[in-house]
Length: 268
Image (cartoon, rainbow, N blue to C red; front, side, top):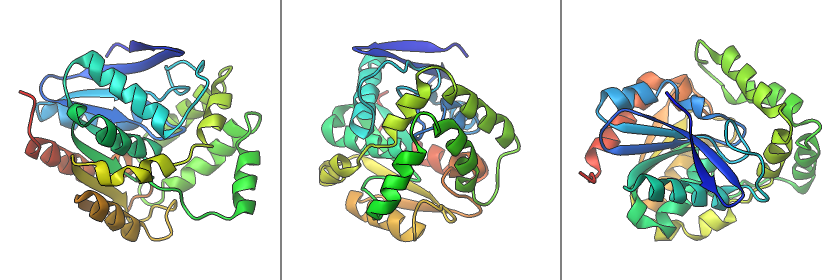
């Protein structure tokens, strides 16, 4: 697959296209790469979809030249990508970008046939001021790559993919490039409040996918069902997985996403 680039006002967004058929766009979470969907993309292609995996701004092969990062910025990049591709899509987002997918569905409904929210943050978690301050200190550019290398494995509670070590190495190496730790640090300061404010405007079909062991949530199933209730969607709870069920249990998540994408109206 060839890396392609979408020019935005302050830099480029990297993406790659696989397959032919109705469009599914895949956006990774904060601190991750588009290769997080390496086990889901082949299932979508085999099922007859065009899978477009994109890097977040300031991550992966995208540029680290942007002045702002977060949910709303990522939603704008996704909108620009879909405008460029010229047709609506099922949008799959993980973690922070799940919030971006929901925001996009609220603000540009003509671009979104459905949304799949994986380990989604669509509202700010309840965190003490002290913990928030400690996280900001830990995620300063000087420490970001080291801290993320240590913390990320904890988010893979349960089963890990066979190539986890190689994927982690790629992520850390990406963060060590000039300017990318700074972009990652800025991304960690995003607020999900703008997403929560527009949840009631989302009319797109919604699938919430949550790992049963996701350590980012005090009660993953309760959070998943709260989101699904707000968006009139469905929930798939994934056993033996944490914050990245699409990579940890692709045998369960892949078929669920394919089935969902087949059910929503196509652009064909």
